[in-house]
Amino acid sequence: MTAPGPECVKKASKTDGVCFRRGVENSLEILGMVREGFLLLGQKMISHVFIGVNDFNRALVFYQGVMQMLGLDLKFTDLERPWAGWKHPDTARPLFVVGKPFDGESAALGNGQMIALLAPNRQIVDNAHALALALDGTCEGAPGLRPEYHPNFYGAYFRDPEGNKLCVCCHDPE
Image 1 (spheres, helix red, strand yellow):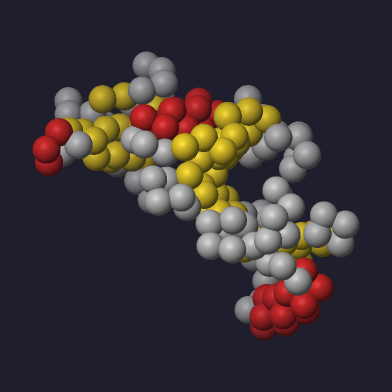
Image 2 (cartoon, helix red, strand yellow):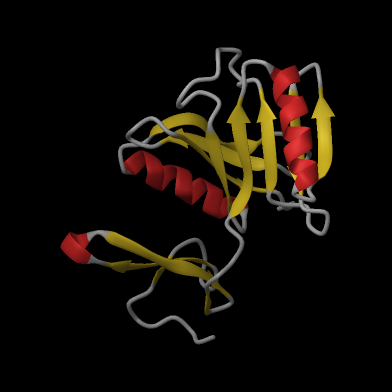
């Protein structure tokens, strides 16, 4: 791995951040993460995928069978929320989660479907949220701790210009 070249504009700190380069028509191309002066490629990207459902009990039966067939372990089930999540037996993430949408409305395109992208630190969560809003996204939840998920969950939520919901999150302590 080589140190990033002069075209790399680092954000966040002197040694860590996101590496951008100006692309076609002055657009920003994200090259990768910079850690200790080196450009990191091929890092983990997905934290979890959430699929909204209207009939949780029926969905739970279906996904338990499918996930078991795929060799994935049930990590949690909460019938009161309701939601359930699965993972590969050898790793904590990514998770595949099904449940009722958080806002209590019916699951539909854009409501209940959300892709969560894993960030290496909280500063990147903040930066990604700000960039999304600058690129015509809409805020669905400012960056911050979400201890209802776990004590170190730090996330930000936004929709792309088409209305698809995304989350960027970090699971590590500060």
